[in-house]
Amino acid sequence: MAEVIRMPKMSDTMTEGVIATWLKKPGDQVKPGDILAEVETDKATMELEAYEEGTLLHIGVKEGEAVPVDGIIAVIGQKGEDYQHLLEESNKASEEQPAPAQEETPVASQEAEPPAVVPDTSGIKATLITMPKMSDTMTEGTIAAWLKKPGDKVKAGDILAEVETDKATMELESYEDGTLLYIGPKEGESVPVDGVLAVIGEPGADYQALLDAHAAQTASSAQPAPATSAAPEQATAKQADSEPAAPAPEQGATQPSTPAAASGDRIKASPLARRMAKELGYDLSRIKGTGDGGRIVKRDIENYQPDTSTAATVPAPATGALAGAPIGQEAYEEVPVSQMRKTIAKRLAESKFSAPHFYLTMEINMDKAIAARKSMNETAPVKISFNDLVVKAVAMALRQHPKVNSSWLGDKIRYNKHIHIGVAVAVEEGLLVPVVRFADQKTLATISAEIKELAGMAANKQLQPQHWEGNTFTVSNLGMFGIEEFTAIINPPDACILAVGGIKQTAVVQDGQLVPGNVMKVTLSCDHRVVDGATGAAFLKTLKELLEEPVRMLV
Image 1: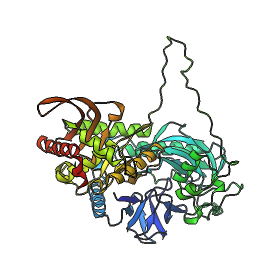
Image 2: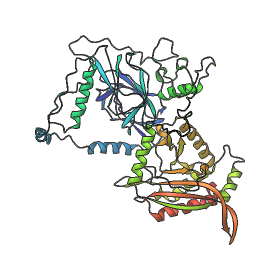
Image 3: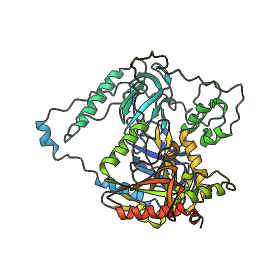
Image 4: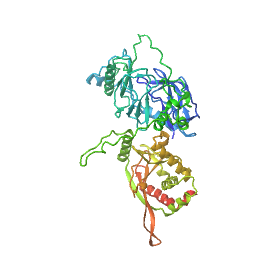
């Protein structure tokens, strides 16, 4: 599914950015970590890094043109994919935003309390670092780890912290030179987008005045806006205009990076490459980058052959706090909710409470499917599982029942022509749903290999947005845990989800006689706003026929 690339907020005072140079052109293949363009902000020229993998389908801004923060810059997706609806939806959303209520506020402001006065901070040689919006759905981030501490010297390009968002763990990069004067949230604490994280500036700078100004500005923005602004935005400024200009920042952040020496220079590497190197115990300073400007990317980590003498030692896991608790003692542990768990809770609660669910359950005789799977695995290049058979059968059934392959969009219903099956995968922190795209057009062996690869990436936290977005129907299978049947909550934006139970040997009636058979129960959860009972029942009937006569899936 195509993804819109928007102008990120690269500094606290940035309102727009100018595309200095495009380093990619439409049609180029892009991988996470590649540099798409150089962006000129109000403070420096920074690199715009790609976090998506695919083809650069569209560039919406020419070199030299300015784009406001969150404005559309480009689109990345599959080659030949239609992306015009993304641009139209974004333009429509922008047009529908209400205009500032400047004409109504003068009367109201006379009766309301006077707005908080934002103190002048133009002479303070320090800058606030706030929580950036790292994805379209992000509303807050959790500090996973601070990589700098108060008093440390910081250069533009240094990594200050690791931030856990609703989709991945990202790196918080510094765009300022100076000393880290202040850190707000502790590790494990959540901060809303635009909330204060830290302050960077000259030693001795009055950063408390910056914090007070930001708090006053936040409080005033929460009140109805007056006809004219009480004070210009001056919450972050490095120095007054009357003072001599500071030396230009060092260019180490934009110089090509070969294997780093022990000079302390920043090693240029994509967040995915850093995460992989950390998990494998690799020293990034010994790896040569092949990405843009010498940046270390995923393929460099995969191709690196470390010396046994340089492998990092992985510390042994800590013993559980409750391991030695005496018998009969009450004990518990409270842990902060992870961003993944928050997202699961929010999305599924919205689905359950907004979509009117109804459920259809059917028994399927799996005798022939068991025999067919055994025969296919004798020659198949990968081991085909029962879940692979279900995914293939679901995709073929959706082709015959397109109304099930749909989404509720409020004032309209979208009937998807393509079939992308989301496969629920349990991971340590919760649940991920990687997507098998165009599943109806793929062979069983291809589906099986792809599901295994996606499940491995999910377990290793290597999934990228293009791996979990774009599903049109979801399959959740708990049969391997011995669950006979269950109901699942619809995974937005889908209209249906199939809950698959285990195969159980039981007595079945065949030709008027009781004989042993293998039965599997499936339950279809439907959004009644989109799918009616008869439509869901017809879909299950086709699914049953395909699984009870699996040879039909090979035709």
